[in-house]
Image (cartoon, rainbow, N blue to C red):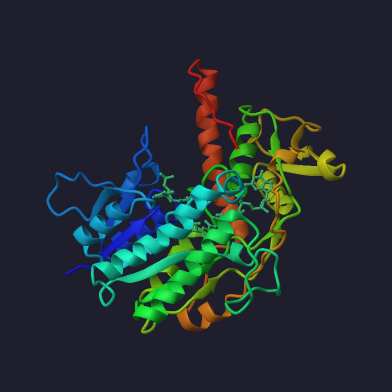
Length: 373
Ligand code: NDP
Ligand code: GDR
């Protein structure tokens, strides 16, 4: 009998990579998707299975982390061996705009799932993974950050995730549930949401290179992050649920770069050297040299980045750097991708999209390119 997994947030970046992985491992995968006015399954369309086929390996259920009875019914119907709670209002800046909703989904949503497991007497059967985050460290108290580093959350998102972290620990200790927190540092991919900083940069610069967007508007480009590849990180989510005992793990690369460096890397992938000048909100980046054919719309001297204070956060997490020693020793953690390789993959994917758009535009079939960020 194949194992059965339930993934909340299956339509998101991590959910889609995890579904790929679990299907390859022979799991029967169930995912919760939200009702939306437009199709929102683009990231999992490649693994979609017609529900009319006999014994589909992937099934989707409409649901929402704010809806207790819906979650309880889905867990009852699916009877999962493993539950991966990846659903969240996951954008830190947006959490300052919608703090109450973020608390409901990212905090109480976790409690609703844990209570459903308890209510349905599944404590001995269902293992639980909680998508915890390096944002818990916020105003960092120790460098690098490891499992024992004290938390100091700096956003409504991080405060909500702090509740989820501790309620997961509490259900493990109180009810013997196999429940784990993966304290994952930033991880990215070509499937990353378009408004997170890495994807905003790779997509924005590819569009600018092809003449589809005028300029990239950024917030705090001095922020430092420990970036890995989502493909590597979902493998660790699965491994955490395969151990003899439930535990919490930091997953990170142990290397740190600035947002400014990520802009420079992305530009290089497009054959562009940049020159940064000015300070604070007056800082800009100009094209200093161009090699190759990937940026036909640009000339030396063009300004391709400006600072827009709209993207500054009311409270910022300036620096994050993880120490993955425990995961390396106990889970055999060894990432396949460096941040630089991941950046190259993201730029290549966004350049292909931008070239397709530019080709259509040149031939009279203009498609709208959303530059919301
Ligand atoms: P995404 O934003 O790409 O995906 C979030 C998923 O949650 C989407 O499927 C989204 O659905 C779903 N969702 C949002 N709100 C609700 C709701 N109310 N009910 C049900 N589903 C909902 O995030 P990632 O894949 O990048 O991250 C996965 C998890 O890991 C999140 O919990 C995030 O906070 C956490 N995390 C992420 C890190 C990262 O660097 N990526 C690092 C550390 C933690 P829809 O598609 O309809 O919007
Ligand atoms: P983060 O990721 O807040 O770390 O949360 P994000 O990519 O949004 O920001 C990283 C850093 O870049 C700075 N920044 C900008 N960010 C965005 N989005 N847009 C900009 O224009 C911009 N300019 C500078 C930010 O201020 C920040 O310092 C992500 C999410 O996936 C969370 O769900 C997850 O928990 C953490 O990573 C770990």
